[in-house]
Structures are given as structure tokens and as C-alpha cells.
Length: 461
Image (cartoon, rainbow, N blue to C red; front, top):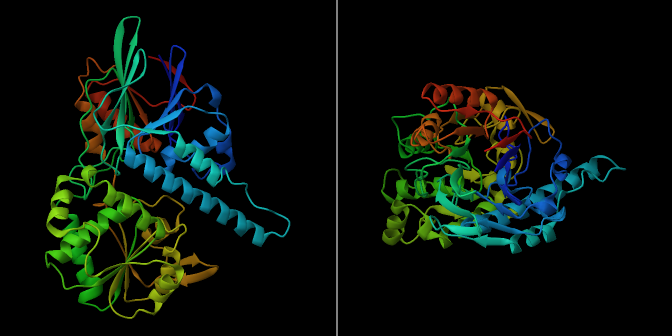
């Protein structure tokens, strides 16, 4: 059995791991690499022959795990793509959104340069639909035989609707071994989502390390933080609260939490506008897969009728409605994407509100270095939006309580659930090198063998 880490090696994005068992080749995730030093078109070139891949296994729908799947199919892959049902639907939605983003970037360059057509899209809608036709869906905790000597099982990992860790049971020369891939690990008691489940005893583990060395805030609940911020921004002061949120996952968790706050009468009612077409589509998928949600969310649904709909909540349908929000003068909450402020309708709301003393911008997720969100969080007094330099007078706040990733302790505890005598190696991926080093040091001190792979290095297991 051979393992090669072809993506998310000493970086966060581009998850792609090749497992070779005799002549059978399994690709775990096929993510888009969008690190700042990587040009988008570099994703077209695979370091292996796509025609030789027998099957793709997906942990969850996020683009850094699925975003290069249509390109793989364009390059000759003709096998099945195995994942959970929610992952299949959310992945199709996100991949179609990627096509729109590619096309917008191409048009933007074309407008700016008379003789340039802009970067060629990696794939088009027809390629996404070809990918969607390959999906074969499995339920959680139901072993499925890929071939005579290989079995796959999807284990709930939290993080996103339908997200799974992958466990492969391989029999070679009469010897049975198990290798696990965490995908992205979620958190316990996260709004809407089920808790991540411990993995069975493993021989090898490919583990994400996004929050290595960092722990989430403790003490307050997300309800406490939101009540406090809404009260300060919209009730004590008649202003507005703008919350940048990723359309899939973060927005649904936020809307559900706001539903509980206002339904339970913790605050006077304030109008809430969700301004993201992608979020609206994703919310329908969350409604469809009610049985995949947490017990708390299912109980709330039975009592109240809908986790994502309540009296003072409004889903913005089109650009006309979105633009009209700039003229809405009553206190309100605006939830819009994208979470790092690098595009989407959120930039329109920032343009009109960043210099507004009566506006608070509350970040509920990670903002990568170099993004507009990161510049605001570090306290830049001026920011560039729509070709204008704007003074920052709005109040900038942040909470990590809605982060969809497990923190350092969650990751380490997941590994420590394994018997160190049986677990032969832990491969750390999907994190910045500093995070990996901190996590590796702690696991090493606990007696686990840890490897931080170089991209393209083949490991004999």
C-alpha cells in the first residue's frame, strides 16, 4: 500500500491524497489549490494520470476538497465519486458557483484589457454536470466494498452538512490494515450539525491540522456573544450589524442560532436580511436533510416548524432588493457572503457602511492573510473597495465561536483516542507549517509517530 500526499501538504488548500493498493488507485478528495503563490491554471496539471484513478472518495463539499473534480474528469477520469448524499448536492452547488466566479473573473480582465480574454476557466457547467453524474452516495457507518480486498466506511466528522472522515480497510497478503482520513474535523455542540465521531482503531491516519496550536474561546456561548453584539449595535444604538459569513455552513448555523435567540425572546425583534443567493439554495438542502442535522436542530424543527425561517428574517432574492438595503434606515442585521470579504454582495454593504460610525462588522470566521477581512481585523484605518480608498469608522469585532473547525485540543484528542502501539504513523496535512509543527510536537511527546509530508513524497505503508 502506497500513500502520496499531492495536496494540502504544508498548506491548507488543495486536499488530494493518492492511495495505491496493488493496481487499484484511490484518490481521497480532489480540491482546488488556491494558495496565493499558486496560479489558478496550475490546477489543470495533475501529477499522475487521471485515467488511471479507479475511484474518488470525497470527505465533504468545500471547494478546497472538491473544486478540481470537474478538471479531473476533463483530463480523463471516468470512475465513480463516492460521498454522502448531502455532500453530493452541496458539491454540485459549489462547483456551479465556481463556474460563475471563473466567468466573472474572465469578464473583469476582458473589460480592463482590450486585447486580453482573461484567464481561461478551469471548467464549465457541462463539466460540473458530468461530475454530478458520477456521484454514488453512501450513508454514514455503512461499510461498502470498493473491490475484493478494499472496504470504505464514512464516519461523521461534523464541520459541514454531510461531512465525513474516511476509513479504508485493506487486506493485503492475508493482513488487514486500516487507514483513516479525517477530512476537516468539526466541533462538538456546533449549531445544526451532528458531533464528530471517534474513528475506529487505525494503523495509519491522515489528519488535518488547520487549528494546530490554536484553541477556540471558552466561557461564553455563541448565543451570549450574538445577544451582546446585537444589543450594542442595534438596540442600545440604532445602528446596523453586518456579519460576513460563508454561504454554506456558516450562514445556516448563524440563522439557526438567531432563530433560537429571537424565538426565545432574548432580544426585541430586529430585522435580519440574508443577502446571498448561494446561501438561499444551500439552506434548501439543509432543510431537505433534516435527519442529518443535530438532535437539537431536529427537536427545534418539531417544535417550531422550521430551523431557518422566522418572523423577522428575510431572504434577499435579487440585486434590486440587495441594493435597496443601503436605503433601509431602521436598525437591522445583514448576513452576506463572502466570509473573507474577497467578493460577493458583502462588498456592496461594506462600500456603503465601512465609514458609518453606527455600523458594526462582526467576523465569525477565519480571514486569510492578504484578504480585505484580514486588513480590517488588523486595524487598517483605510481600505480599498471598488477603486476607492475608504476610511474605516465602523466598529470591527470578531468571534471564533462559529468556526466550523475543531481546535488544537479537538485534533489532538482525536489522535489520542487511538492506541499509540497500533497507530504506526500520523500524517499531518491541511494546515500552515507552524500549526503542523506545534501539533506534531505534542503528539510526539505523547509517543505517537508523526510525519509532516512533503508534496509528492510516496510513503510505503
